[in-house]
Length: 253
Image 1: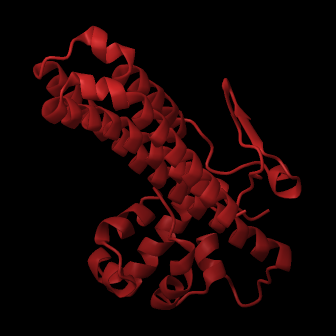
Image 2: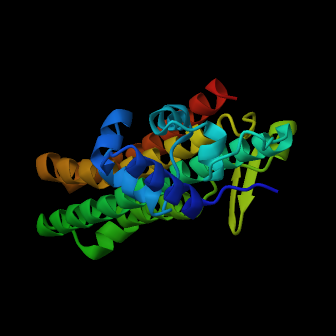
């Protein structure tokens, strides 16, 4: 059975590039990618995105099948339809996995940046006179809850659901100790990526907005004003997140 081999494809791209007397930068310029991207292909660290397969094959003067096999195909050598389909499917799977990996890395970085900003907000709240005890009663509690769930989505939640979610009407998701149940909203692979983005962005934004609103309220209106509005701010942020999740989920359901 023919399978995708990153190292073999990379070596084939490098050989064909050199046959064409092109540098990595020149090949990258023809495909509108960087020379670093070409270098990753040739070292087997990644494979070309599926949308680049045809233009790359044309530049190297090979067929897409030869590119995915990482070898020249003799004229008398015939591939059956199953082999070609397997190559294309594996290429799509690898491209999707690479995209998911890059997206997850981006969200992890965003999470760490938000943690640093949150720590700075807490420092400012302490400097204007709030005590750790006062912060623990609401601000730290809300931030901790938001960061906990946002951290799970950024670091552990799956980007794709099992296929049975697409075949059945399921409105809950379970992974480890975490459970999500939203009545009236069906989870599937059409809306789950969007729901995941909304959850991550919404919870990180909420974790930053709550202490910021507290800071502004205490600074300009006093602690008594904050004590009056804090519960409304908390439920307002949670309600906004819930509505955003339902809106996104229903739109792509």
